[in-house]
Length: 90
Image (cartoon, rainbow, N blue to C red):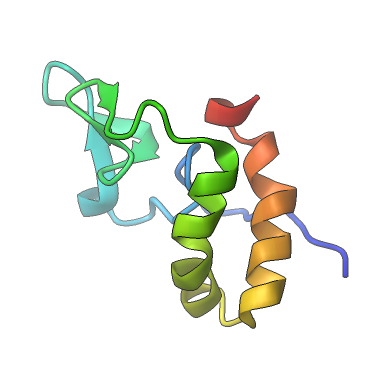
């Protein structure tokens, strides 16, 4: 299966959609962060600074499966394709 990067803004750590401003993380000064979600980035720092890309895939595969309406194995393959292209993991 061939995957494409999403066209909507996504978290550059976990790949969830950032279309809703309430999902965005915050900078140190409290302003919204356009690159990362509130689960990954808070007050200018990563909430889990030591997490590996493999652990991130394991943590997000279920929510990705549900939000993207794809089977778990396909969601895992999608994340293995997508996450290495995101800012946090480059």
